[in-house]
Image (cartoon, rainbow over all chains, first blue to last red; front, side, top):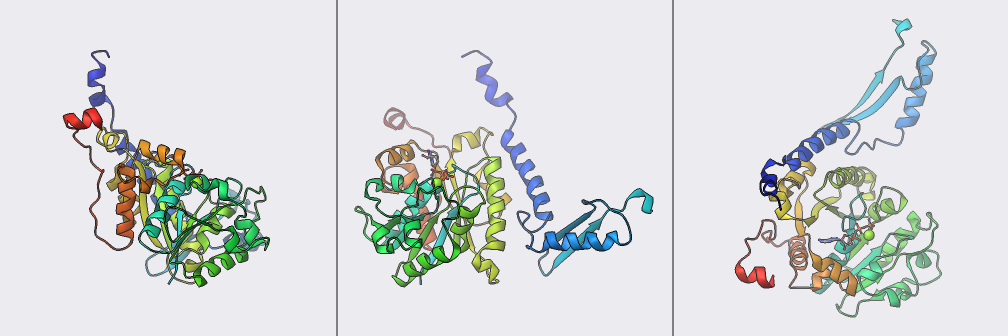
Length: 90
Length: 268
Ligand SMILES: Nc1ncnc2c1ncn2[C@@H]1O[C@H](COP(=O)(O)OP(=O)(O)OP(=O)(O)O)[C@@H](O)[C@H]1O
Ligand SMILES: [Mg+2]
């Protein structure tokens, strides 16, 4: 064991702290994208498809232009729709 | 009233089977009639951990398919009264476990007067894991102090509270956190998440902390659930967890670095 090894424990970063911070950010993000663990109701994909079809009657949008999510709240859940319109439609 | 408990984790290899064996054995040791079911179709292992591998004649899928009765398939433990093991099938057919089939087995166990039905879930969030959790009243979420395991636990908690039968009926599955393979030395050294960190992130009640222990491997070598090794730290921690599960207020042990005395160093 070299002299430096004696001090290695102190020089090493506290990686557990980094782990905790990364997890907190990630899990907060994943919860925001649907219920806990991102499992929305089964009808979401179909709903999304139909909304795209309706929008396409008026504007030509990409397949990924519509984002549908359920935001779980304490008292009520919210259906969140995000529709990105192409530049030309502005 | 029978209770169905799923032992689950999302991530593989974190200690579900070890914990299922210990928990079922612990509950039965308290005089509670307990069945432990291996849901890991194709990768049967609970039989080995319970030491009953040579007594397997029929399995879970045989019962579901009507090729054997539940009584024929269940293996009665020879060490502990009131303990029965239902082994998984080694079939590679992913669809062998049907919802109706699983439900009828669970209902038969309930009608038979079982107090606890412990479901050892496979890893992942596929069919097998889903079947293991679908009928659960309570869930023991096994988590290692490690980023991917904590994240997967969070994910499985989400599935429990949205996709299980209880959740579909508007209720909620009672959650318990079981942290396993815990090493207080490494937590103190700053390179392992602490129990407090994990509880804060997952925010579910802590059932127990099982230390990393060589006796778990020894227990699996000899086919005897580690909870029966009353001298081992892991065995004691599982016993405490059972007492807590049954409502006793038991302080947590083995969570801090033990200052080893001279004798402990020599013989520990
Ligand atoms: N407290 C512990 N201390 C030391 N080793 C442990 C501990 N708990 C589990 N292990 C070891 O970890 C490995 C995986 O355990 P186990 O088979 O119970 O996990 P699992 O979650 O059921 O895995 P799978 O997802 O494959 O079903 C085994 O080798 C076991 O001996
Ligand atoms: Mg297993």
